[in-house]
View 1 (cartoon, rainbow, N blue to C red):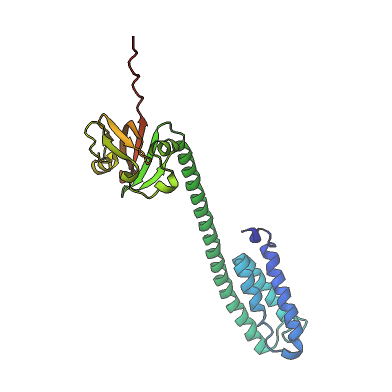
View 2 (view 1 turned 30 degrees about the horizontal axis):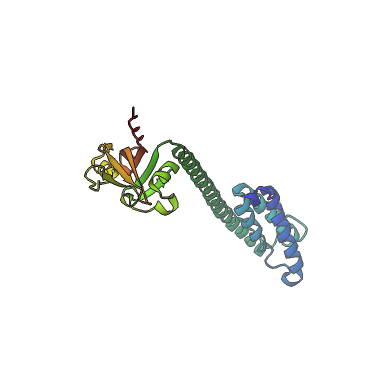
Length: 258
């Protein structure tokens, strides 16, 4: 894209291609003589068509036809082509050149379309990345602990509060099953409780924890918590994961002795 921005105007390229073909043909003139007066100008036509499209290609075709007829067809230095063989060559050059203009213009349109598609794709990717960064910043700023998982129950995100309460950092927790990081037990019976996210994604509605739920952190410390879990849905209602929001319950104040 940057290179294309600084390329000369397509019509300048078309005329420059004709000039180059003229110079090369002039250098080869002692060898070729009056034969193949139009042959090298095919390259000018196809170059102009691919770079600039149909109109610059037609400009190159017309200029090439006039230049080749004037300098190399018999009689030389005249636009009147009197030699029968050169007339056939001129007609062939005009016909084939026109086809090359069409093909070259088609190739250029494909290249332009491809560049536009790539630019649009890059813009979409950048937009998605910006949106993800906004969501990540928002979730990181939530005051409660927050964990998201995919459909398999593997952790995809934890905010700082969740890291602190669970004793895990996101780098080690990401990809782990939520039960490995978010370990909870009943505070009275000490029975292990299932992660509410699994039930929320299975049933398709929010689920809360029972009272007296205790979170066992990675270092073995215990916290009384309250939480709620809910499925994450796409616009069409398809469940793609789950989100868990929890916080530490305040510890009751000890009774004041009198």
